[in-house]
Amino acid sequence: MSETPIVSNHDLEKHVDQKVLIQGWVHGIRGSNARQFLSLRNSGRILQVLAEKEILGEEVFQTVKHLRQETSVSVTGKLVRNEKSPLGFELVMESIQIVGESENYPITPKEHGIDFLISQRHLWLRSSKQLAILKIRDNLSFAIRKYFHEREFLLIDTPILTGSVGESAGTLFSTEYFDLGNAYLAQTGQLYLETAIFAHNKVFCYGPTFRAEKSKTRRHLTEFWMVEAEVAFASHSDNLKLQEDFVKTIIRETVQNSLQDLKVLERDPTPLLAYLEKDFPIIDYTKALEILQSKGEDIVWGDDINSEREQMLTTEFGGPVFIQKYPREAKAFYMKVNPEDPKTVLNADLIAPDGVGEIIGGSEREENYENIIHRLEEEKLPVESYDWYLDLRKYGSVPHSGFGLGSERMIAWICGLQHVRECIPFPRMMERLYP
Image (cartoon, rainbow, N blue to C red; front, side):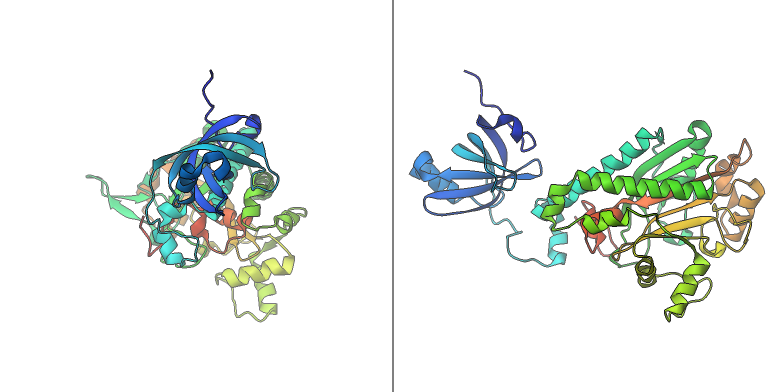
C-alpha cells in the first residue's frame, strides 16, 4: 500500500480527489458544533480544511475545535475542489496530528498598532497581508533578474564593506576595519559595478545598501535593496530608454504573477498598468521649477524638489515623469557634467505618482580622468581613496551610463502601500533595530 503523499499548497491542482497529507499552521478557525473550518497555512498560502464531527468522531472533533492560532499540525484528508474557498480547493479532514502547541499567540485577529506589529515582525510575517507582500517582493526580484538575464547583462556581486564614499559622506555607516582605518557599509554598488563594464559591457548588481539618513519619512529605510545597472558605450539618452523599458517590464511581469496576492491586499492594478501605456515625459529640472513656481511654490534654482512637489509634477503629467539635468552641486561626483550647460549634470530621476516619489535615479558617468579628479576635489573627497576607480579612466575609458532602483519603493507602488516598512522582511529605521 502506497504512503499518503505530503503535498504543498502550491501543488494542489495535481492531487484533486486524492488522499493527501498537508503540514502547516493553524491560521484561523471558525465553525459550529457540527463542523469547523480550519485555515491551514503552508508555503505562504492558506487552504480551507473542513472538519466534520460525523467523520472525525467526538474526541477528534473537540481537539480540532479547541486548536489555538499558530498550532502546527499535520492533516490527512481528501482534497476536493471548492470554488468558494480562497484557493479553489478544500481538504476534507480524516485525521489530524498536533506537531507543536501554540499558547497565547500575541498577534490576534483584533486590530493592533503599528509599533506593536513592527516589534513583533518575526511573527507578523505570518499574517495574510504580509504573506502577500513578501510573495510580491519575491515576484519582483525574479522579474528583475529575468529582465537582465534575457538581455545578457552579467550579475556582479559588489562588496558591502568599502573604503570609498559612493554617494555622500554625510550618510555613511562607519566601522573600524582592523589596522586599515575606517570601512563603510556600501551606499551603492555602482563604483565597483563600473569596473565590470570594461570586461562584460552590460552588468548589474542586486543587494542591500545602507544610508545613515536621519529621516523618519514613510519612504526611507536605513537598509534597503537596490538593483543597479551599468552599460558601456551608453549615452544619457540610451540610459533613459533602458530605464523606462526596465520599469515597465518588471511592473507588468510582477503584476501578472501576483494577481491573487494583490487581491488579498485589495489592490486593483488597473490604474498602475494604465500609467505604463504611454511614454514617460522627460522634463529638465529648470522646467520643473517653472511648473512649480506657476503653482505658487516658493522654489529657486538649487532647491530640492521635495515629496510634495514631486507629487505636484506627477499630477501635472498624469503619471510617472523623468526629471533630468539637475544642478551639478546637488549630485554625486561621478555624474557627467552637461556640456551644453555646465552648471547641470546628465542625470535623471524617475518620479512615480500616488505618493511614491523617486523610484529610480541614473546618469551618464564622467569618463574623463581630469574631470573626475576635479569633481572629487570639489566634493572634498580623498582622491587617493579612489585610485582604483580612477584607473578605469586611464586604461580604455569609454562613455557609459547606469541607474539604480530601490526595491522597497517599487514594491510599495505595486502593492499600493503608504509606507515602505512593510516591503522588506525586517525594516531598519532610525528608531528600529529590533527584531
